[in-house]
Image (cartoon, rainbow, N blue to C red):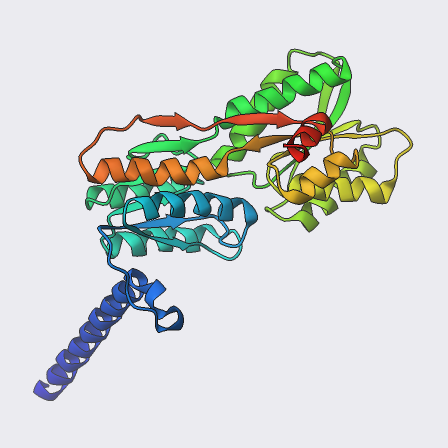
Length: 327
């Protein structure tokens, strides 16, 4: 009996030791991840912030990091940029938890969903790690501030533009990046509230592209087969517009279909020049990153920041692209 108890205690000790070592190395690998890139020395810095994007290699999030990096360099801040390769809520949450466990000086993250993100953000705040949400807000959380587009207002503006361009007569399909993401839900709701004022505008379907150009094309193609009367599309995320344009090009309808997109990716702007996308909402991702780091710096140095900071947006059409090209 004593022998069994001894073995049991020994096993428990081994498990606890293993878990402790694993936690230590997880902490260290996250905190100094950048130092393993070519055995580069760990930089000397005053503060260590982490920027967590929905998709690390997405051009939209890369622009946010550019702004964040510029602000960090001005203030001697070590900024790490991490994120899932493809949208993955579970992985995103783990990264927030890792940053919290590493006791970084501040976190910039999106608040994509209430159920999963609220506990992770609140836990960081409770453990003394300030969190600012960018691009996608989570008002119900303890986040210190939100910086980014007024997503409801942006969707509303696109709805108003559609009313103006169609004289209030259109059959519309909506392709949204994710059905559950707070920022995209607000864009759709703003759009629906705007077009509700025009009784001859009808929204026939809303489908998700899962933040994928190919899936946006597939869903738009299916929608056009089911509803050949569609005269306009609204794509709520960066890759949706190009995907919708691809589907329309494949169907090659006799009557032109207007496409309203989001963001000013290079491909989107080219498609506007080619009259394959009618208009897009230009967000200011660089400003999100720059102001996000600047505001987080203010927090950790004892300053005050607003609860909400809305970055600028603008609707771009073909004439606006020409002006940009000549600047």
